Image 1: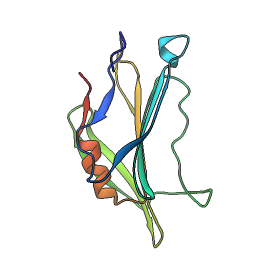
Image 2 (image 1 turned 90 degrees about the horizontal axis):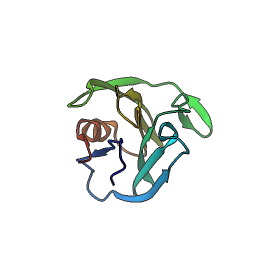
Image 3 (image 1 turned 60 degrees about the vertical axis):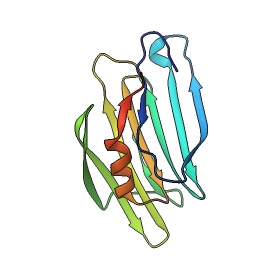
Image 4 (image 1 turned 90 degrees about the vertical axis):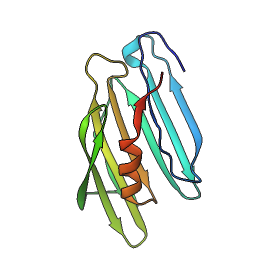
Length: 135
């Protein structure tokens, strides 16, 4: 996917069995308003890679429509951002992880985030560490 002036980020590592199940591309009237969301799923578990430049809000992990605070943070080491925190929340029937908005200087889309549900946060770390620019 090439759009003049944009550099999108994609995972070079996707856990076995996960497939793209949803791709949302919304081109705004202005380049700053363009957003991309890619959902990868396997059964009931999934993760979403979000990219946008405007209108970002707080990224929240939720269980049964209630916001939950992270129980901890793993550290991922990326080629694009360096050290990145991967927050996680684990209860018997809930496994969540999230990477809050990462800024990209002088690039569009300007922000990237990820959130996963129903999967081990260590897989989230591997996904984040494998993020690269799409050439």
